[in-house]
Length: 310
Image 1 (tube, helix red, strand yellow):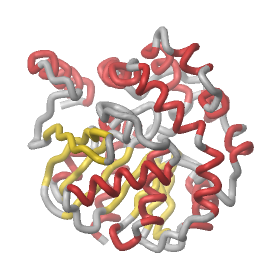
Image 2 (cartoon, rainbow, N blue to C red):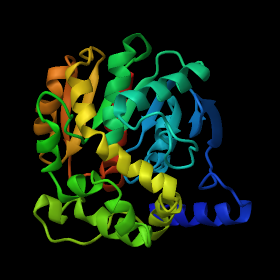
Image 3 (cartoon, rainbow, N blue to C red):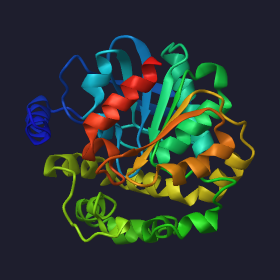
């Protein structure tokens, strides 16, 4: 079954089921909610074996992991979270800085009685994963760090905002909500190709999206909620605090896998290395821009399974 066909099937099942927590599921996965410190956190779980917690970035939700979750679940119990205030998680966290969000994630793992899970994050979710591993080393088996320069000693807030127009734009107070709020789906549809392989952010000219229409529909469903749209932009508005928190963070000693868009692994490793002392591999994902899972799911799956079994 192709990804597009799978997405169509999921959308049809969602419509028939009237599900309010996103796509209907198969392969033994299920939607769950747990209250954590005033936030009702949504996650999708399935599989069996040692626990793996997956943390999304912007503008995605747990659904960004769906292409690889069935394969991971053959060997592990998978928990794909909606970060506090995002996706189908409801309520407002006390902060959107990554250290605070990591504490919510940790509180959830404790409520679920997860014993030393592996923590894997992509994009800004990778910064949350780093903070989790730093703050809770005895509750971290391994760290997967996917495609994010780590805000901190190697790259400060002003420099970070110069990396891409969207980082500076999203960090502005109120402005992105006003510009994007009337048609969130159109904005997302235009944004996804820009940071894909051969997209303009990588010096190419391609406008082809690695996302299906159904996948864009699902992300637009959640980010069209004003509180979720605002929460997503708050992830960028906390960059200066994230830098300070990383500078003060305890270095992560857990075995760490870095994966990045083609040609960027060593650059990202360079930003991470001051605070990650046990990077076992830093890998370029072939033929992938920022959307590693969507653009090369086979490679990401194989390397994650390899890393988690070591």
